[in-house]
Amino acid sequence: MRGSGNTIVVIPTYNAAKTLQRVYDDIPKDCVDEIIVVDDCSTDDTRTVARSLPVTLIEHETNMGYGGNQKTCYRTALEHGADHVIMIHGDYQYDARMIPACIEILELGICDVILGNRIRTRKEALEGGMPALKYMANRGLTIVENILAGQNLGEWHSGFRAYDRRVLEGVPFEHNGDDFVFDTQFLVESVHFGFRLGDVPVPVRYFDEASSISLGDSSIYALKTLQTFLEWYAHLLGIRRSVRFSPLEPAD
Image 1 (tube, rainbow, N blue to C red):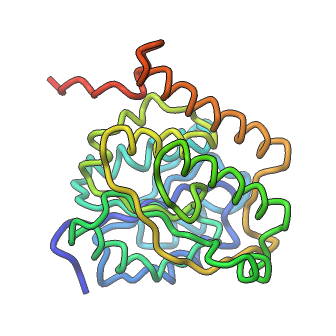
Image 2: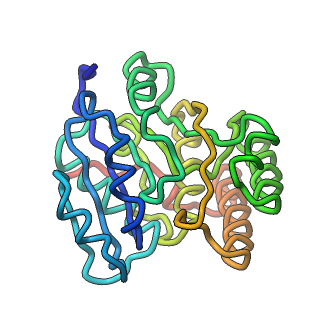
């Protein structure tokens, strides 16, 4: 059932030709007003698949990176009048059927930011195909992040997220990195500006076509995550001001 606000789903894609159709098919169309696909210069047939679907397609002319892709997603959703924005990766790791539950939570005012939690139990995560090393890294980093941010999220590293419009208008995400650390920076900023974070369970889906960052990139991501918290604490203590944790200037 359609909610009371304008709900837009954004799908950042890169080489998602084998999975994009499945993501689209799972989206409950009766509760969504628009689906926006932003392709970041895929080298496969992602754009061909997207053009065959009734979606708004934006094609980057140069590769902007994972964070850069999301910036385009959110900027466009705001321009199109979104009250609620659902971001879901195009690799089919996340279950789009949970979108109505997220919309209801946002509309009830229970949370401002909602993440899909793939890790309800260790057994389920591993049987769903999550590599053991990735599971341990996810759990360890999430524990540290929860302690540092005063939160209790099941995981901080989800590619399924729902936002109230006020979050996207209040978080200075344009100043975030263009790589994978964008996600952590966005969540820390959300905590800093007083938005309420929560999560919903989503099934684990790991398979050959699903994208996953390499071990080397994961290590860099972990270091940048910790650097984000250092930057935040330095700002809170007045040691060094950060534009990421400063209120946005009113638009002219």
